[in-house]
Length: 289
Image (cartoon, rainbow, N blue to C red; front, side):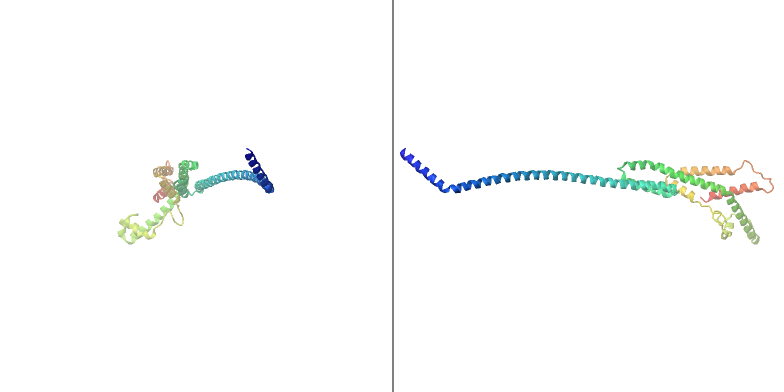
């Protein structure tokens, strides 16, 4: 035990000597360790602050990214809406153009524009309600075109009715000239006496004096309203309806020409002559179509 105590005392002395020898270095190391620890705490605090800043930036970036995605979605919706509006406006402009042409009495152009609207442009906007609305209005527009062109035709027929007497007067006058020419030819060539007016020989002999009763220096009858009405009703597939209405109108005009009585014993025969002129004019206006 004494030896052990002595050994322990020696070791303690050695330790104390070693400690006394390296005390300054130990203190310096401890101070350095304390400073390092303090720097580590500061660095940790800075790292925590930086982490919070990064997290805040990340959240802000995520919000901006979300806003960008939503903005792109809104922009795409706006672009699609703009294209849809342009398509619908183009269809609407063409629909308005049909009515403008109808107001200008360009009936065939209005019908062509309506057909183009129905067969081409409406097919590109079938997903929109305006296409269904315009499609439902097409039959009404077709009826409006048919009624407008028929109204113009009735006006034209009224004018024809007004000029029928003058047309018949011209026709009878030139018929008298043909009779005179035929009589002169028959006087020169007795063989021609057996051929009456409007026979093949008379028509051939008089062809160099051919006269158009409807288009001449004194009178021009424009059949454009009639032809346009005929063509439009044919395009609409309403030829049967047109024939019935046209025949009915001409029949009423014929009935207006037929008086209840005709005086055949007046001094100059003016009543009969006027009646024959009107009948001849009506027949000529019916002959061209």
